[in-house]
Image 1 (tube, rainbow, N blue to C red):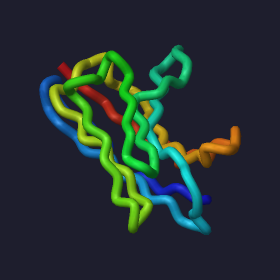
Image 2: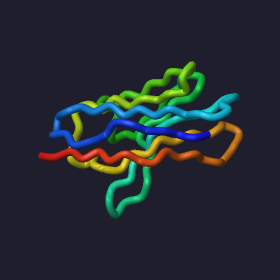
Image 3: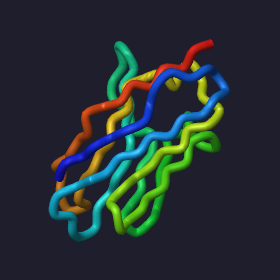
Image 4: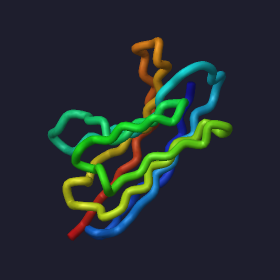
Length: 116
């Protein structure tokens, strides 16, 4: 599985950005796609995830502001980020994992910078 992420960039606080990620390769079976982020000096953390069946999960810090969606036919996951805060600044990584496996696949990371 290969992941190609796009989006990210510089935005003022309160603004919006959209991240997208496409998985390629042989994709089959139940899986989860999502976004993690890592801020300087901090550990990587889950931002949001979405199952191939549609269930979603969000970090408490982004609930009500971020929305994850998925196009199953294209194996694409998107993250709409609204009302961005300074603390959302981080490198965002796309993630893919089959539900029966512990192996994670990662995209290349895309930088989101929120300025005041």
